[in-house]
Amino acid sequence: MKFNISNITMSHRATGGYQIKGIVNGITVIANTNDSEAYDWWNDDTEPELHTQALLHCEWKLEEQYLSL
Image: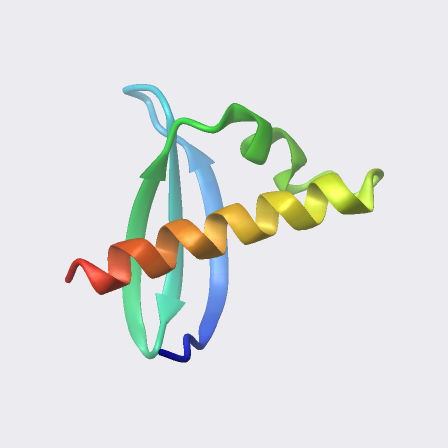
């Protein structure tokens, strides 16, 4: 299946963990993660490999959540 993902945001939840929000194939999807390293590298591109891994983690979580809808 091909995924078209856009407008990804990541934020800290008050209850702990992190919320990832994005549009997948035209549908707004919200996923959760406890991966603090992904959150740390989300907005920090000083280490391109780690930044890319954080972006991929978010995309995978959104794809996973989209498939469970």
